Image (cartoon, rainbow, N blue to C red; front, side, top):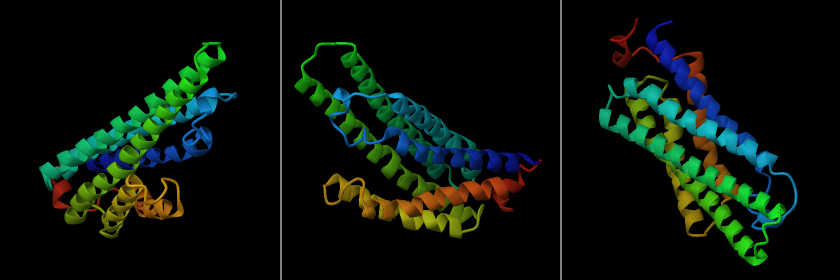
Length: 230
């Protein structure tokens, strides 16, 4: 196995790992919409597992950028650096959201232990933590993947390291999801709606197809990889 094949394999695996974020949907339940979660009874184990999965996703995001950078920088180093920056920023926003939910869990546990705090004040604090997570999710896991798709998609389209149909999906999907994110920002559509779900599909398809192709096929023959084949 050549060094470039190993690079493609590792990058593809990292991309596929990011899809474990789907498992957080049932684990989190309605915590992202329920502002009374902090005062409600029940176990917080699902939140903790979901937070762990999101940490793994954040690290995998950074892994995709670090792994691909040495190859795609040969096409355009500035854009490659931009891809690394947006991927790291995406991970940072994920960590921000996770920290917010973990803080919410801690406050809920303190309440259960008899913290004696005012209920109205707790509801306000809980609502603040939920809002922080929701906005961090919009910026980190919705908007930043669009920036990643525009930068990496352009690099892969020009270099032909993968079939051009794959980055085209990302280049088409990015503006759609950006428009959806702006619509959510201004309250035109709900964060969880059929419109936002439809806008998310092309970006999800782009990242899934890229991950699968890199794992199964690796990079296509290219001047960018010819000089480093071993």
